[in-house]
Image 1: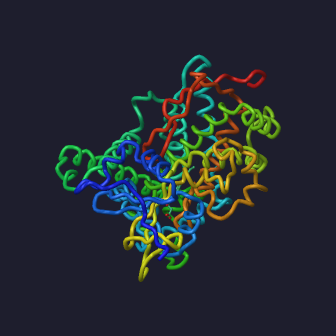
Image 2: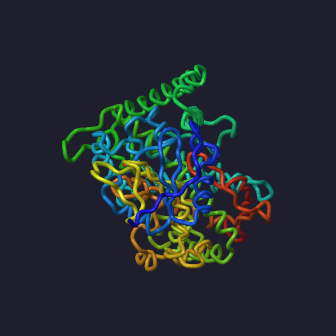
Image 3: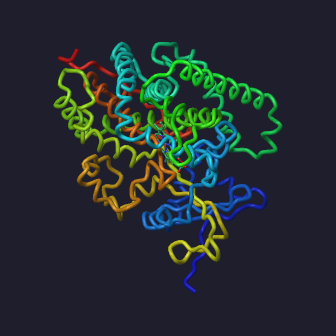
Length: 465
Ligand code: HEM
């Protein structure tokens, strides 16, 4: 028999492997454990479940290509169901509302539909340029924070027709909805880290959580009612939610379904896109050659003039930089799948047998740095490898920052357009420097991963108004 046991740290009675994981940075723990096992696979006992973790290109490609492995919400995604229930991002794959919302909303996220949201994205991007210009070159900017506001304000405008105005208010006085969302995030993260019976006992936290939830849903309802009372032919996400029809059944989304998915967009699209931009700024400032190439491309296409939609397809190096930043720092760092409807033993790599239908975690950090795909310079920021002609030659399932198959990200075009607009506007007008010239990248884990303590200075470029 060629079967091999799946290695892993010994579980303790009752506690399992919980002590092998830092609950504040589970992703780092998972990545470090992968490094400490020579092979591409290991197992952990977390709570009552045995979880399998895979990291090599070969094994990940096998799992992502096999149809029986289906997305399974775990951890904070699972707990997010307390808020957005069976939204696209949190739904179990068999839930009917996933299929209905997927069919209804996919057209609104296609390239043509996203082009119609250029004006909104440009609006928020310009506000950030203005804020950072006024900040002055001597002040330290918390780039991750401001870029997350950029993404959140953009989504609020496109999906809720609402302005959060994050850049024109005091940092400690966020829009009430931002406050509620932050409260919900904190609670959901805690819930994911502790047993359900313990959560039940947190009366005061639970009351606050329910209040935040109720506030969110009330506000979302007002937004929906307002758009229904004031129909608009805007091609924004709000119209797709309110007026879109499921092509298979001809039905519209229920109000609950609209609210769940509206919130899902804000939750799935803000930290992810904001942190992509923060990581990109880091890699560009840390790699002067790539920085200069990007700035030259933007100068050649935009000159001193305004950014227009036609420019977006003329920025191939910028696009490659975004892809490369997502390779090195996939802001959603782990994908989770589970085998569904399989009879008989389930083998991975022809030799590792699963212990029934176990959850499998895919570590994108390792997948995206596997030397068999990316070569010896896998650790380096080299956008050239992501230019269209090279990108097209990558083997299947080598670059998965947007997830897999039917459950892949619906908002990737949205994110790329928003990020491209932001990068073009920012680099046309400003130059960036580390506040600490010796800054070393370290990663903080929130709902997604972000650069920790990344402070920059932004200096208006000479000869640009
Ligand atoms: C799903 C990444 C931006 C909406 C996903 C998944 C990933 C991902 C990895 C699959 C999650 C899983 O397998 O559990 C990203 C990254 C982004 C980004 C890296 C930015 C750089 C956005 C934006 C939106 C969005 C801007 C909305 C406007 C969604 C939704 C899903 C999803 C609704 C669930 C799709 C489904 O299962 O039907 N995203 N995302 N994402 N994302 Fe994104």
